[in-house]
Length: 139
Image 1 (cartoon, rainbow, N blue to C red):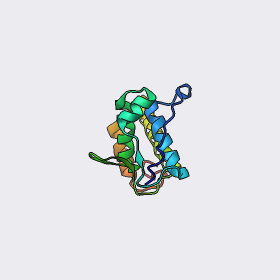
Image 2 (image 1 turned 90 degrees about the horizontal axis):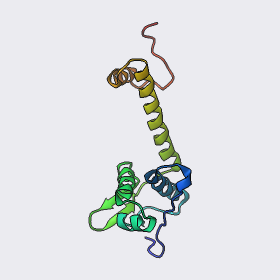
Image 3 (image 1 turned 60 degrees about the vertical axis):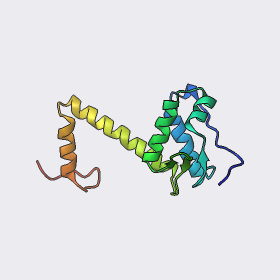
Image 4 (image 1 turned 90 degrees about the vertical axis):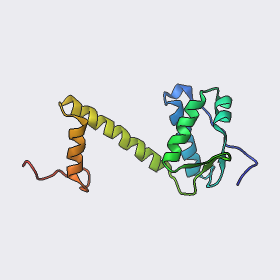
């Protein structure tokens, strides 16, 4: 573990990107570039909040989301560490893109008078088909 130098977050308020998202992007970029590696400890939630003068809940949200994605591991009483697996920037960007696409799809279906449940049911009917291939049903 590299204890000599701690990871420093930087905010870019003019970017329009939510603060929690900036924190996630910085960690995933640092991992992808090798600046952060498996087992390295990140600053505490409180320390990041104080350093950046932001709400600790914002930092907690970013850390929690990265933990859910398997990017970070939190050890109670010890701290938050980079998980022992390879994470690429592309993986995080791909996940974010899919989230936006799903939201757009749900909004479009709603505008056409369908419920999210109907949309999900239809997507489930498509099963393991690659995206972009339409079913022969209804033709």
